[in-house]
Amino acid sequence: MAAQEPYCGRRVRNRRRRRTRMLIALYILLFFTLSVVGAVRSVSSRVSSRSFEEVEDYSAVEENGVMEESNVLSVLSATIPVMNETAFVFQDLPGMPFMNHDFVWEGDRLKYIGDEYDVRFGIDISAYQTEDRRDKKIDWEAAKADGVEFAIIRVAIRGTSEGALWIDDFFGQNIDGAMAAGLQTGVYVFSQAVTEEEAIEEANLVVACLKDHPINGPVCYDWEVENRTYRTYRVSGKVATACALAFCQRVEEAGYTPMIYTSHEIADLRYDWETLSAYRLWYPWYMSKGDRVTNGRFYPHMVIWQFSKRCQVDGVGKKVDGNLWFRPKY
Image (cartoon, rainbow, N blue to C red; front, side):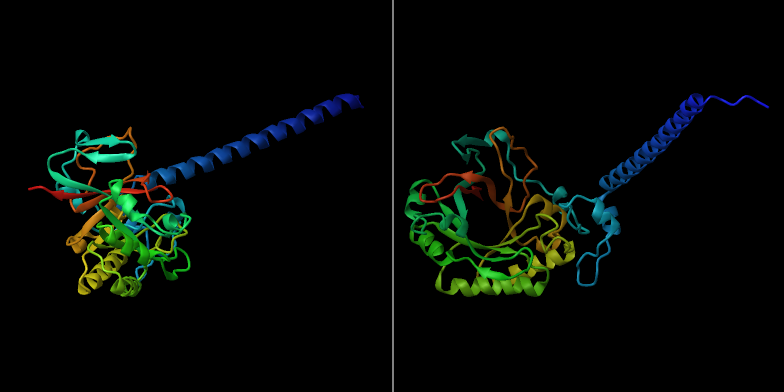
């Protein structure tokens, strides 16, 4: 009969076996985790490196132009918009001939010192600035004395989630005040239109509001997409373009000059500029004193450049957007 292993020896051996099994399990878990992370990075890399046409192919668009959810949309950044088939149509056109030496900073304002354009400084105003003042009124004479030469007033806004359309509480007094001060005065509507009918509704509202408040500047269409919470997020480039066109055409019919406010993301990735080429642009690109102005950054259709959102202007409560309006000298 073979001699039995002492009890303490068996206990040590069993402990070592359990420890070995635990280490093996941990290694397997670690290997699996690293494999999953690597796969996710690979997918993300492939998606981010796709051309605009490839991303469009992966996005199913319904007949009404609204994007269907897809696996790709869950991987893409929340700010990646829906592309159109004519993205970067401006790439073959000469940009605004601006160079860094054409501009200097004077306090918090950017001043054009080049030779090609006559340039005016202006601001855009909504209830946000007006309601901050004690008397709920902007002092437009003070603003003019501080160098403001034009103003663009918000008339209406559509909600980013529910889509309700409402009028800016102070649009009338701001239009009348700016006009009385001798400023060239335009207006804008913050749009969240997802159909042509909604864009026309917005245009009709602006036209109706202007009946008792004459202006001498443009009527601007400000259609934006900030993130997934915006109702415009899943609207295709085709429908976004149709909405902008419908708004501008209705404004023209009413005797006003339309203009399109658009960021780089919307201008390049949503709008079809072969369709919208008749309309000028109001373009936001916020500068800091360390940034350089380079040729080709600006669109050839640009008329107004919104260069800052932190300008201090006499007669206005909160800091306000600063704008430069360019008119060719020759």
